[in-house]
Length: 480
Image 1 (tube, one colour):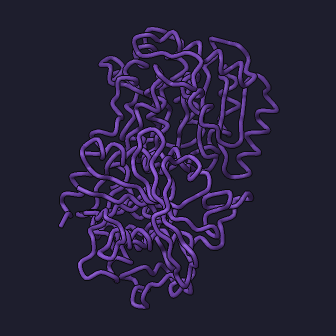
Image 2 (cartoon, helix red, strand yellow):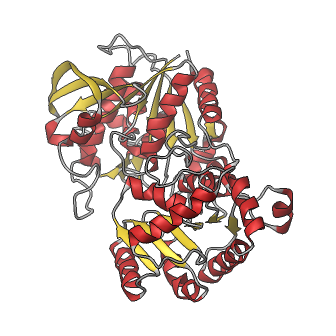
Image 3 (cartoon, helix red, strand yellow):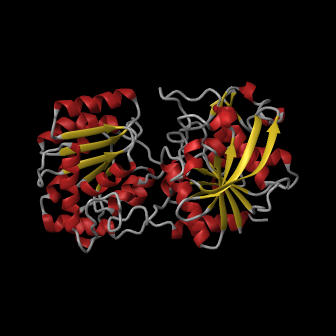
């Protein structure tokens, strides 16, 4: 089985979010199953600097895009093959999708249209590569046009899988980009790329791909409803027999508290002493009061309403009164960034906030916090709630999407049986969140019960092996 995996980002080469983690880990897990999985992505300068064994294998010129190169290299570490599209005008800039002011790049349609076009070309019968994929696996809107290109350019298109990582990001552009993108006029219809008078890259993937997947079973059901379907619920419901929800995994080598190079003290479910040492080190690093008994609440998140950050902000005064400390890492909506900065200034030693992203600090928060907050309004899958459980940091989550699929609520019955791994709220509002955190803090002050909860969470298997097999099963169904 040969699979070309097309993505706009892949860890550790380029990352803005969970898509990169999946794009770095899933192809590697597929290769462990014997699949010849290779990644195709834009040649961002930082990604090219990190890749190993770079070689330029072709250079062409396209009328609408100009000079383009294709490079082949390998991921650092596992050595998995990766192809880079080289285009200085499109990809040699800071910011994958947006500028420093968080505005979308105005030429994103052409930038990711080229990525989709190359994916279709390299997967199709006219590919210049010796590598001939059995399946093209596309991810999110940035590669959504690839199945459309294949449909219109090949008599027998290579089978395609299109994975929705977040339906809220749809890649919507005005209809006048249809011609420069090289799509035929007949594609601009309700049975095609047209979406309320515009072009939707995401809809193109949903309509033209051979099979659809999304990143958790619960989210697969949610996006077929009007409440969560973002205007695409009808199409998704119509294709429900071709839609599979496959829960994301995590890289168990990258996220392992016993061997994590970012942590000052290793620990495991059998030796939990290092957990407290990481908490003390994190408090010292961030200027929090050195209080071993204060429950330390951690967040590593985009600071957006989708992630429920606004509800956490509302709850902070009550949680501070209950004795909590906070550590927050993330960026997002400027109003929420400012709100968190004001809270940190008003509560020195109790709240530490870092606007931006720091991979090492993210690991240290997962290890050093006592309780992890992730009350998303909607969450296709989520990874941090899985990281936090692996690190013995029980999460507080909203019962949606992948959060519902990965966190077992600490009810009395689940606590008694050892099944509990975190705290799940059914309603996202300040009162529900405060109540859940209050219950978590009460359990935290019962050391034996809390250690049992920690160990139950750390015992969960969130690895990629089983998930990769599910993707392989999907590939086999459409392989020609």
